[in-house]
Image 1 (cartoon, helix red, strand yellow):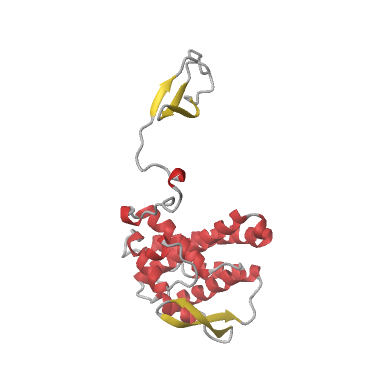
Image 2 (tube, rainbow, N blue to C red):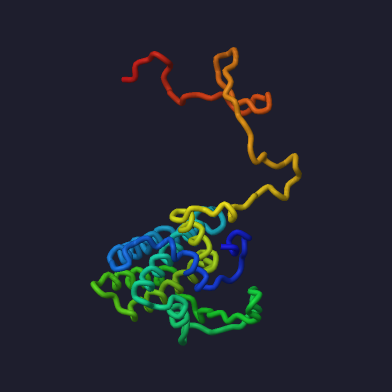
Amino acid sequence: MADLASGATGSLLLSDYLIDIADTDVLDKADLIPVLQGLYGEVGGIMSTVKKHVREGDAYPGFRRAAEEEFGDTLWYLAALCRRMTICLDGLFAEAASGEQYINVSAASDMANGALAHIAVPVAPEALDSTLFNLGRSAAALLEVTPTVEGVRTFARNYLGALSAAKLSFADVARANIRKARGAFISPNPEELVDFDKDFGIEEQLPQTFRIRVNQRGSGKSYLQWNGVFIGDPLTDNIRVGSGSLIP
């Protein structure tokens, strides 16, 4: 988790992704049905958000975040499926990104323990509509009593194709999914919490502990008071009708 806490960017090992999400898989390890249903449902989410992201581009960054989230949730379910079928996830994607559809290029690695990285680049990226159609069709094919390894490999290949057509970073998708999954299922370790203003000047930092007093002023309105100073807007009960009124 140090990778996330430090705000790291760049490449992310899929083996590290698997380690970080392992404890978030709380589904029955012997039951494939909820995993397959979840995978199929998330693919539907990809189809409904990715086209908006590609159409609007940077005009609406919310569409990009939504697309990344749907791809991340799909990756989570794919990892859960591979865990139950004893399929190596990074090996699965390595096979999916091989063949005539990809070329391998070398790049200087951004990892301290690896000088060189090999990147699989699509020779001729497919159109967005066809990649989404293929992804949906391969997801539907997995809805069998016992999905096949070849079916999972086909899905992984189509996942990479759709990710490329959507112009999204695989590493960004995976990192965002780690944050979401661990935030939902893992209680945070206080030592891992980031003190976001520790590098600010002392006058710009929030106090670690403080006491707030709720004080009613002569107007009858209540305010928050800190160190003798009233702060913020007056407190209300958010009731639209006045006291004593009957709500129809």
